[in-house]
Image 1 (cartoon, one colour):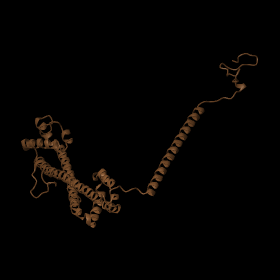
Image 2 (cartoon, rainbow, N blue to C red):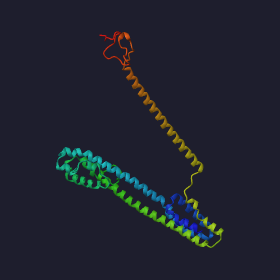
Image 3 (cartoon, one colour):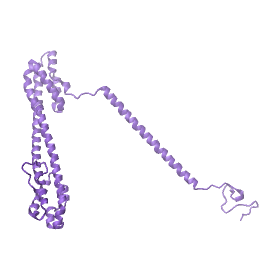
Image 4 (cartoon, rainbow, N blue to C red):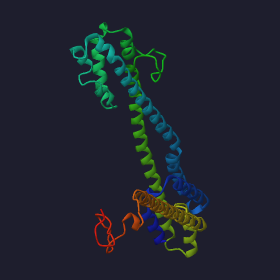
Length: 317
């Protein structure tokens, strides 16, 4: 029994994945209910179980909503960047790129807007808003509307009605609130998990103390209240492992055979190239057979460079 308690103390449930931990807890609660001696441990365990696993669906919805809002905010940022680039031409046409008015909107050029992120875009929108409020009367109406038009009362901020800056700010505020909700949900989830783990540990120690001095049969019944096999990762089937190993070996052999085949093809191609080069060189060199009549008979094993030698030893002209 001491070894059993040490197993749980050493393992601790923080290392166990949710799916295995949920199966273990469900089976554990069922066993407690069916055991009259320890049935009193079932209600607090069931409550801790519900607090953790029962709230998981709602927490997943909060996380999904946050992810959707993150995407929406990113799309609004990209829309703002696109409008800033599009209307830079109207501002430059009105005052010129070297003017103070143009620099009022683009002191560091368009690259500052293209490289904007969710942390820096707020400052850029403030600047653009102030510039439009001061100089907007000299620009076309649609430029002002694209950036600053208010969102209609019944319109969705995540839609297309209203200026991009009010729409971005509305979606961003919702996004930040959702992030706060997710963080709070995660803290609560961690707390609920800890509470459930502590309850299980309390059950382990309570049962262990109760049967510590009892016979082997009683201890065996107590051990069955905690189905340890549900906490362990499922072992891979031996046959499946052998088949996987064979498949890997076959793949390695096939790869090695392909490499050998490719090497042989490269070697054959190299030999063919070398043969072609030698053949072309041979064709470019004319070989003449010895002919006494033409005076090209070798003398003392060497070809005569100046001409042929007559029978009487005189040099033929």
